[in-house]
Amino acid sequence: PSEFAMQAAALSAARAYASVAEACKYAKSHEWAKLDGDVATVGISDHAQAELGDVVYVELPQVGTTLAKDEVFATVESVKASSDVYSPLSGEVLAVNTELADQPATVNAEPYEGGWFMKIKVSDASEMDKLMDAAAYKAEISE
Image 1 (tube, rainbow, N blue to C red):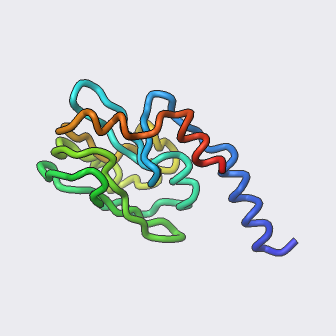
Image 2 (cartoon, rainbow, N blue to C red):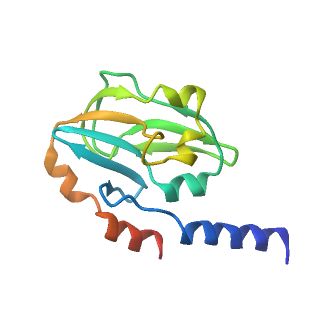
C-alpha cells in the first residue's frame, strides 16, 4: 500500500480508539469543559490531539481575560498544523496551565488531566447545557 494509504489507516485507527472522559462536556470543535462549582477546566479532547499529532507549542490566554463562548482563546502548534482553540464557555480566565510552555506534549499524553489549558470562572452556567455529553461526543467523532 502507498504511504498515504498507510497514514490514512493509522489515522482512522487512532480515531477509533480516541478516549472520551465521561465527566466532561464537549464542543463540536473538540474542546472539553469540566465544571466544578462555577469554575470550568478546559482543554482539547483526545480525538483533537490525535488529529493534530505531536504538539510542540501552546499559546494560552492571559489570566484575567474575559472570553465569550466560541471565542479563540489559544493556539496549538503541532508538527502537522497550527490550530485555534475555542472557548466552550463564557467567563473570566482564572488560571492557565503554565506547564504546557515547557511540556507541550502533555496535551498528547494527558489531554484530560495534565494537558488542560485554562480554568475559567463561568459567567453563564446554562452554556454547559448546550455542550455535548460524553455519549453524544463519542457519536460525533465516530461518524
